[in-house]
Image 1 (cartoon, one colour):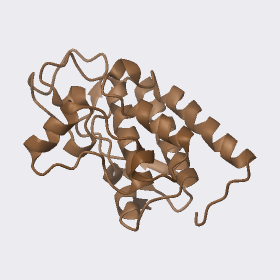
Image 2: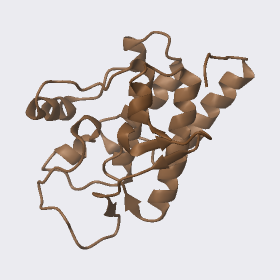
Image 3: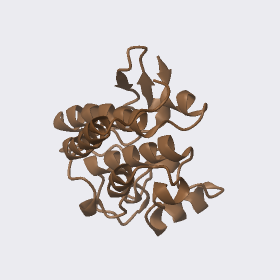
Length: 194
């Protein structure tokens, strides 16, 4: 297969294709989270799309067990790929990272699939981290007006700065994506390409 980063190098995906891929990733995350693991480095380069369309999640190198007593990182240590990190991964005062950090990253990936870029793009690591801590990403519809309202809403919920305002689980995000796909199939919406 090809990693999603390579797929995105060819341009944005149509809303249904982006939603279908995000749905597959949400389902994978639900299984990972149910096993008590938080990935902590979800990004397009870690998502392989097989020729069948099936999505595989790779690189659990910095993942963490949800109930683990052992900490592999020091307090205040930031781990992950900055462009896809949740605010709580960046903030040294944060009380911790849970499964909702992976949902935030998935929201950023959905955003990138829809508009062609990640929302936080400041030059330099310090600038990017300040931007992540500074607030929520802009609505995808403000960047591309052809992004469907419901998909925009899903993306905005997933990328809420406050984890309490995000989807409570990968299963909840998956249900929202399923509803979007069902509603667009029902109205006959079609888009070019796979």
